[in-house]
Image (cartoon, rainbow, N blue to C red; front, top):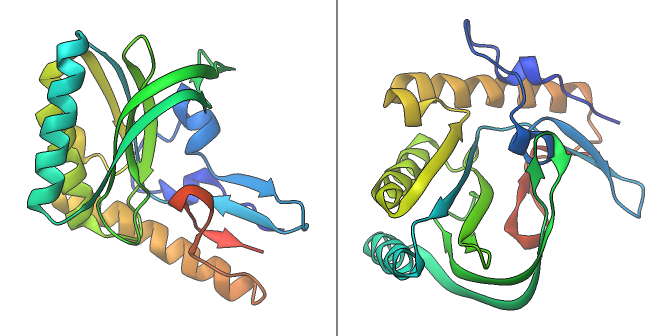
Length: 211
């Protein structure tokens, strides 16, 4: 069983590693057990985002803009249109799951990146995360560039970027965060020869270590 401390991954001096509401479920180091008895840990650099669109015209604009942005970079694109979706969400440190229709677009920026799901509920709200740790800083900055392009269509778009690029546009700082996580992961794999990582699991998500 492997449980990494969050501080090990966010260990750059002065970095605030306190969990946000969205990170409570999706982004903090977590130990999860599957039915076969194995466990996996998630901790790598991740972009968390949430917000509500201004109106239905904004939804159409976001899908068009995201589609154009992705295709210009040869990223895979899939439309999202579900009559009865189930979304795991968190608000005020409590589970706040959604069940109902959704629409939007899913983008895959890189084969070693989580899908970027812009999946909006019937109230035009989205709460999601995308781990970029294993795709590299270049992909991370491109995802942030897309979110910045889409931000004017939101009443408010809140982004919690564990690489700090959203707030600072500092590529060197982002690279340091990614390198720090990579060193911690490499150390853990050396300590636990039977573990594997990184590993892609259901829905295209990436976890750092599976034991």
